Image 1 (tube, one colour):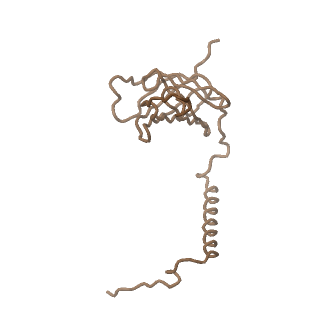
Image 2 (cartoon, helix red, strand yellow):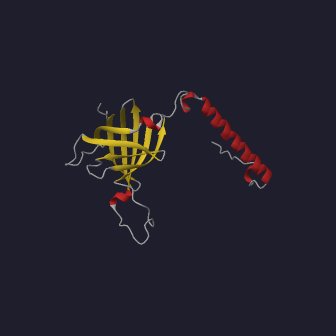
Image 3 (cartoon, one colour):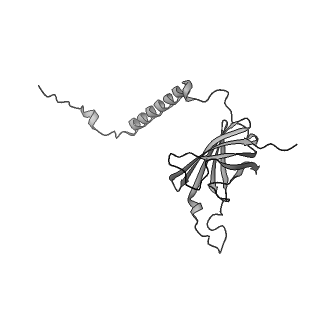
Length: 192
């Protein structure tokens, strides 16, 4: 068997030092990216449905009651209830959705929603255990003690279906995933 030697043309081995040629290469790369993006927008699976709109925030406002369940493969801690009753209160404050869930992780502190966004019929919310603490240096002359709750972050995702919310909570300590819960909630009706 004979061995073939492939030689590269000298023009392929040199570095591109011409700024105009470099600009043209960048332009062609940009043109390719734009065309690829435009093509993806034409493919039905890559874009949102035409009628999909965000649900108004007022639809999430109110008191929701239901149960919290463990959603982990490992068995729940011995003292944990399988179906723990919870209350989720969502309100509009200064034009933003905020709220609290009590109890959370079995404690009376609950979880406080600090940031929200609505995507279609889903409420995505960031929360902390307990009440949000002021940032370091917000209270002059006092240093606050570090607490285990400061490193816990909760990411809620609730899907709205008329008067029902179903969802999950992913709990992380620092950047490490820790716990997961599922929720089945219904809007609490006021008495007439």
